Every structure is written in structure tokens, then in C-alpha cells.
Length: 408
Image 1: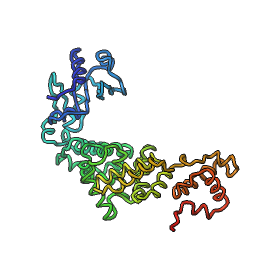
Image 2 (image 1 turned 45 degrees about the horizontal axis):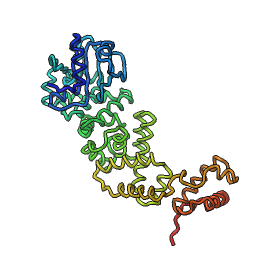
Image 3 (image 1 turned 120 degrees about the horizontal axis):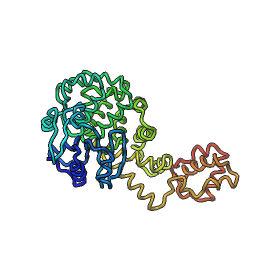
Image 4 (image 1 turned 120 degrees about the vertical axis):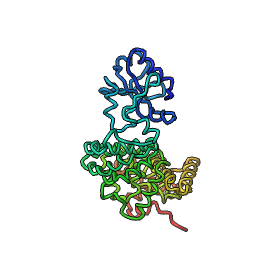
């Protein structure tokens, strides 16, 4: 029997008592059958939304679509699918383990032997698999995601049908492939999911044939380690995708990123990882660290450093570089080291009011002065900076060597 939190039990009982047909379904049923506690709660039943609102008025409606509602009950997020007939709805599921529904106060519905497949930890289709994948190749990614979610294996006939039909993904929308693949790599057992995707032949349809398979020994080695240790890194897509693309040569990785049509925010982050994580690797001295922070800002640095930390977990890199930057940051804050443009004693108006330059050029001038102050922090004084600004304005040679630390 599935152990329901009191909040879920209250919803089920309230609707049961009014004669509605209500069942738990999805991951919570599979995990319950395995004796595990679930963090995911999906309900299916014939109660209309107005009945739910009436019987459990304190529920918060988070999202509402046709035939589907997302509700908040305390700390729990519950997905509720509305259907006139639960059994008919379950018959539409492709995989046996998704064709199970349970009402612990009533009965278990198991139309295609899904309970037995859960006990065997198998992902299997409801009947002959090939017609499903020929009709909708994206179901291949769905099956891999189900396996990766719970550390299941894919039943042999289902697996073979997937490999035979995988080429159909070439006609799928890239946005759909991206989202379905994202479900795989953010799952509990993403490493297993990635290995399955590799074995079935999914990867060229995700990354493109120009990126995958790996083109040299280093790429192959990095991807191989990622397939083994992917579970070690943070679950967020921005980190999982960043590590995946960092396995490959930058130019081809950028082509693959563009191919997957990410939204602008996600694309920007993943490209930042491509551009800055290799650069950050060599940032181990205070001077170079200040330049990096001043150029990109702390927020960008923090993301790149977090990606670096995830790399360290996956590839067992030494932590000395990450620790070094951590201690340098502490020292910068302790001594109030000028690191960013805002740390300079001069502002844009200080340069424009004395007629050194106009407002637009003043912003670039401050960046030049910051380069110098990174090398010589004690020169962060108004009189010195104004003098240097005048020199930089007149003398391109001095501008060129502004950030050089001369050896004595």
C-alpha cells in the first residue's frame, strides 16, 4: 500500500466521500510499489475542478489547463488530471508502468501488468513496441527518461524497437527533442539515461552529427566519464547541459547549442560556460582573478565557477584552484580591494565635468583605469586617476600597457 502524506490523503478522501473516482498515478505509484517514499504526487479522476475547489477550498490553484490542474497543498505540489473514465485514460499510456493507478482506500488498477514490471524494474510498452515508435519517435526519449527516473532497465523487445526506429527523430521538432532529452539528463539516474541514449543511437539526433559522435580521443574520454558520473553534478539543466557541451570542441559545441533552440536565458548561460570555464581554469593569481571579475562581473563568475565545481565532481579534478579563488575572494573583501569599476574613486561625471572625455567614452576610460588599478591598487586615488585618464586620452602607448605589472 502506498503511504500517502496526510495532505494527499485528505484530498483523496474528500473526493471519495462525494462519490468521485480518484486515484494516484505516475511516479508516486511506482515508488510506492517499490517501498519508497515519493516527492511527486499525481492524481487522476473524474472530479471537476469546481468540485475540488468546493471540497478542499484551501488548495491553491497554481496552473490550470484543459483537463489538467496543478494545485498546491501546504509544501506539496499536486498534479491532477481530469478524465471521465480513469481506465480509458490509463489505456492511452504507452508504457505499462504508466498504466497503473492506485486508490489505497479502494483498489489498484493495473491494466497491462505494470505492477509486475515495476517489481522487475523494467520499462516495457503496452503491446508491440515498434508501432508506437514509428508513429511517434519522441516516445523513445520518454521511455529512456522513465528508466533514468527510477533506475529501471528497458525490456529487450522495447529496446530493440527503439534502436530500429530512432532515425525517426530526424523529423521531430528540435524543441521537443531538447525538452524530452532534458527530462533524461535531469533525472535521478541521469548517467544511466545518458548511457541508454548513447546505446540506442539518440545522441546524433540531439547534438547533430557534426558534434556527435566524438571526433577525437579527448572528446571520447570526456564523454565516457560523463556517462559514468553524470549523477554527481547538480540537477539543474543549466549545469547538466553545460557539462555535456564542454565535452566537445567549442565550435561544434556552439553549433549544437544553436541547433537545440534554447530560450535566450538558457542559451546565454550554456555559451558562457563554453567561453569562460576554460579561461577560468587558468585564473589562479590575484591579478588575473581581479581582471576576470572586473571584466565579467561577480554573477557571471559565480555561474562559471559553479560549472567548474560540477566538472570537478564528475572528473575527480583537484579542488586546489577552486579553493584558491575562494580564499582570494575572501581576501579581496577583507582589505576592500578595488575589483570592479564601481570600486574606483572616479565616476563617469568626474571625467566629463573636467572635460577629459564625453559620457560614452568615459565608461571605456574607467575600464582602462580599472586595468591599471588591478595591477597597482594603491593608485585608486582621484588625483592619480585623473592624471592617468588624461595620459590615456593623449597617449595610445600608455593605454596599451596600462595593466602591465613591470618586474623590478
